[in-house]
Length: 224
Length: 214
Picture: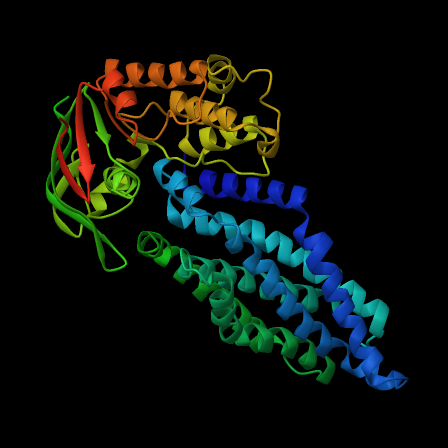
């Protein structure tokens, strides 16, 4: 079985498990929408402020809860399953890629759903031609968050306070993704170039992908 | 053929604590070795060492020709079958899906799945979810996986505990099949009687050291 066959198989099973568990759809997404609702309540009846703040709140809530989506897989990655994969001859890098693929599908879906909720709740004023760049920025941010979450899950595998430690690793490293995502929209509004911010997102995603693939084997061995 | 497992003064430490020490051991082709010992004596750690999932902190060892603690082990892991005391399955999948997942990852022909399910007596119950399955059924699905992956080194950790006679016969058949094809089997248990019936040689482990059983 090739590297990509293994990655696709792991991704396929992860998505099937998520479809049955429904953690993202039934738990994380509703809580994120509730968090979106809380902000307008705090701002009172100042509709212009609500409209103005919409995109910033989207990125803040999106990244915060997107991290939970990204870290979700790490939480149920039991040592016995890791051992089984090793004895079936699964390449740890293929496991990283497979988990990143399935996680990215979930995180992208989550952020798109959150974007729709932001439109309904905040009615943000956006410049013409926004959908393409904003959806691209959401996609790149979601993939980066998932890579980061998967990598943090590998670094903390086997540790007792794994979930907390993984969050502490992800939060500061997600800053380039937050800046890239939010500034893409900001640049569109100011009519300046969005290219530097999209490049920042692409560079971050690529760096995390290279780190994840290169460190997969040593991290797996160190976790035992 | 030759020697499948060789340990020379090997020791294992976990979290700074020495769990196993001065292990010298050899297991040849078609041999069944039993290792008996009380809880906490290091049996499971020894099996993890032989499964290449733990590296020796001291001494040397080779498993299926690969030096333990080196990158050589990555190439032979596919030839090792480990049955731990907790069945390894994905809880949200059915028994058939678990077997299908392992078969695909291993790169074996998925057409063998139905035959393996029949052999282990799960053809009718294969679409049950793991949570709806008994411990014995989970053991059977592990046996089905080993029928497909056909390991050269079979490692059994308390594999007979909690199983009915039919399931025990299934494990016995796996042992026979492995040795008949030139493989080796190492089984550990706290129950020496289980081992004496099945192993050609039985050793005892106590406080992390191996000795020939009385």
